[in-house]
Length: 218
Ligand code: B16
Ligand code: MG
Image 1 (cartoon, rainbow, N blue to C red):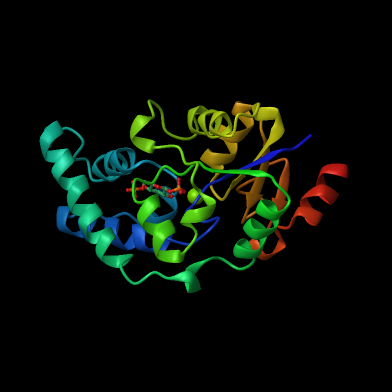
Image 2 (tube, helix red, strand yellow):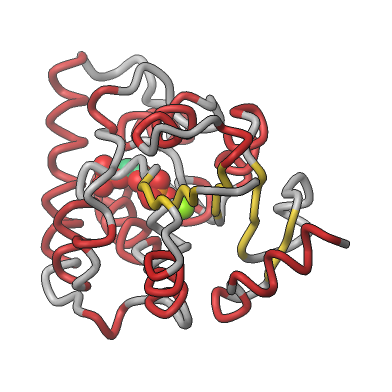
């Protein structure tokens, strides 16, 4: 039986991907790297992995020391932190506040499996911190998505076995991680991109307990 829900943040609870894309775009411009489709490429990927992708794209992979890369990543993050300053409850994706309230009322466990080190700030700004007292600290992770590590840890925080958990993700790397962890995957977004998900929804507004139960019994 399902007893817990593990949430990705960006693309599931709120859409910060446009701010990530914008902030990386600013850095890529400065480095002289042209990267069409940058926004989609960095979705769900950790900060340093995203930086490596951009440097590689520009043929710059060998040009920077570890300390210089840290500085570039810090610069992107400073751009990003500026962009998320004005986020508020209006930035919660459709239906997700109601879904969280319903899960809490029915006693399901809720935890966060976001790769973002800015997740606590974002949750505070959109007013959902109280639901996510259990959140994996991405600084403690050895591997990024698609590795299952973050999803396994998110189940452990709930004192549940992965098989008792549903994981919600908008990125293909995240769905792969949920599946590898042994949880039931719910993909939100393009069904073709997320074809490995056990259950697919196009829109967050479709994510309800009733719709999930229905899909599981199909
Ligand atoms: P930060 P998620 C991910 O969030 C984003 O999708 C990804 O674009 C970003 O690089 C990553 O967090 C790290 O974020 O730079 O704030 O630590 O989808 O895992 O909630
Ligand atoms: Mg995401």
